[in-house]
Length: 255
Image (cartoon, rainbow, N blue to C red; front, side):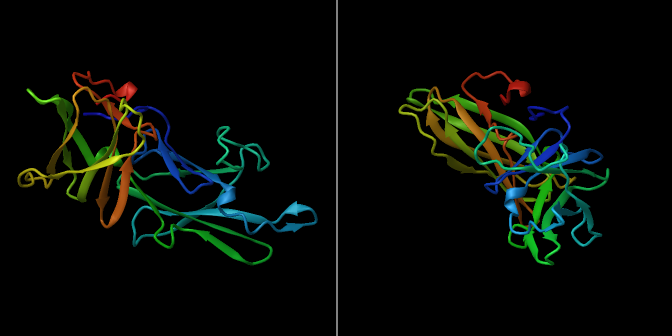
């Protein structure tokens, strides 16, 4: 089951001032990804020379953990550090670069360095772990997502079944009831468990259920671990959604 809200959009990854990051579009092997980086994440080095900017923010990246490291200077499309993606008060000045993803890799790893005339170095590297982005649509396929009424009871079951790559060691769903009364933003976590042995290709089926109100509208995202790193599929920050009798519609995020 395809689950991308914007499957044909060019991919970008935004690193925001509040240290959230957001993936949008079709991040996949063989694509060119645009990095949007809020310079306020690394504000310490702002040297000038003769009134001109004498500092940089570089992106470092690799596609194989023990493989070669590449680097590129971030720049501003406007020519000055004033571009913003939105009116979000958590957002500052945006710098960009573009990275070509090879066709035969399963992730991209990123980290950043701010330095300049002073010689000081300031890193944004997820506390030394770096930022690892897998191609989540290729990591697992959603087989079934349903809200199933429980006959004779004033409740239903939120049911998830999927098939995942052998690289995935754990997977679950973070969800909330969008039509709860009174309204609530609190999220629950549904851990999925392996359903039977892996297939000959190594792919593993996972499944799980959680009780929800009988007419629940459930908004949810996928959280999983692969090779010791945590990843998420939040549908571009929008969550996915389902409800009893919902008709599959990937353009609106309904699974």
